[in-house]
Image 1 (cartoon, rainbow, N blue to C red):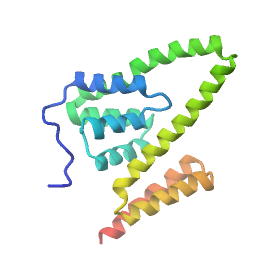
Image 2: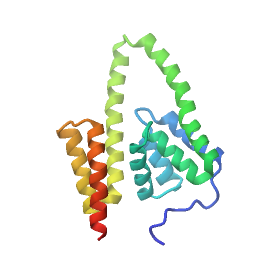
Image 3: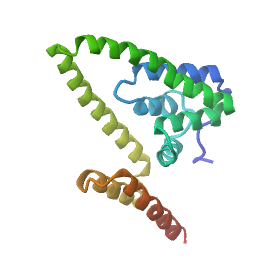
Length: 185
């Protein structure tokens, strides 16, 4: 079937998951979700863009960080419990060590004007990565007017009305479920 997610040519091992997620945890400054999407969808083709968008949506409604939720679900889908553990450890361990080292370096040099300028520039780059990932996640939904309306409502609620996330989630989840039910009929 054309809508089925791509199946990797060979089974994915926990070691492959660990190495993949560890690699992106090291380069994912400013947030790793764009890198996770790149790895899982574009580079390794472990799942389709549509499946990734669904996993990401589900992870946003679960407790904890959404990128951790996605890594657990991708790892579990590809290699069971060991895959989930490998993906999460790959995502967290290298970054934790690197962040501790960089925090110490920043603590010692935060007073320098060059360091302050670099931090400001990294914030802009991170915002750009998040915006690009958002656009790439909306692209597969372009054929669904219902999905696009929900995306626009959420963007308006967050960016224009500045509603708290909990209220956006509490209203948009039931609204999207009702909309899905009505369009099924």
